[in-house]
Image 1 (cartoon, rainbow, N blue to C red):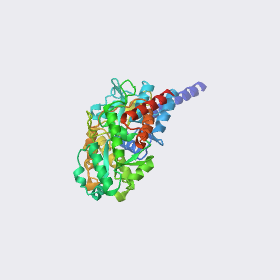
Image 2 (cartoon, helix red, strand yellow):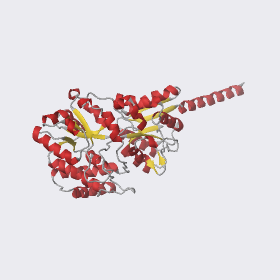
Image 3 (cartoon, rainbow, N blue to C red):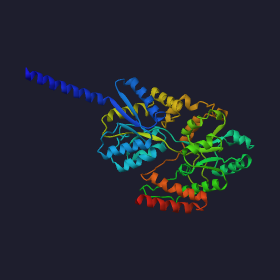
Length: 429
């Protein structure tokens, strides 16, 4: 009898272990950081997937910010991969650091059958290593020039005449008129970062590093971009602020007539409903005299990655492929939903057929169809690469640009030399 009980107990334990393994195999854990944006979008994707796979649980874990996710992942990798999820979201400028520092940590999704020709091409570069591609592109950071149409009218100008591709020289001329007529700087500028320069340089396909990862600032695009900032500052067109909150206040409160930013700033603009009908969005201005320059650029954006040794690698890949990389009507409808629900414009090109992509938006001047415009500009964004030391470069370029605005540095060449010195000091520490 004792032997029978022992056998039954062993069998029960085996069944329990098998049940636990099955439960784990049917659960996909995702780490991201914004419950109102990427977290919301992933939960909407889960709804689509669960309609066909009701036995799979998609657990979305929200962190306070992107650094929280990256830091937790890094700690897990340093501990041998303990405690990591199946999927994690990374900002595009962060990912090359992980690909370089932790070889083989992510699953090759190209080998898993993802068709990357269906995504905006500029998103694929940072997630590519040799013949492998590791991520599923999420949102675009497609940029534009936001202007207050009512301020243009107050300055005696017709906003309709600016609905076209312009150059930065055109913007300097426009800013001088607005400043003279209504005493408003044309563009709110945040001195605590270098995003403005990044957008200008990237609009010409300019890179800050060579393919081998070495610093490369002495390029036509970087020099021309710094010169644009100098010209704007010298003309009194930049409304200087420090920090995100002060920058937002400058354009939301009407202290500046505009800003340059990505599509995701629309939600911030709409937080001031009294400004409805006043904003107009133009293509990113062209960088004069630089080969390959486009009226399009990028700021931000993120992508999803599957850990190669995750508990449910196969399930995670199937989930992402079935929702974020599928032409299935339900998947395309999901992209349409998150655009309206969170202003999240995906970079899966077939998704642009959704009704919300072409709809007019009454918040903007003459009900501009802003999402259709951003989707069109997204196609023209040059390919981007960041490298592992991208954020370190920012810590060197930001103070160099501040010296330019104060008159301590006079030329683009002086700014570059100062940034190079700061960068070398930072990487040597």
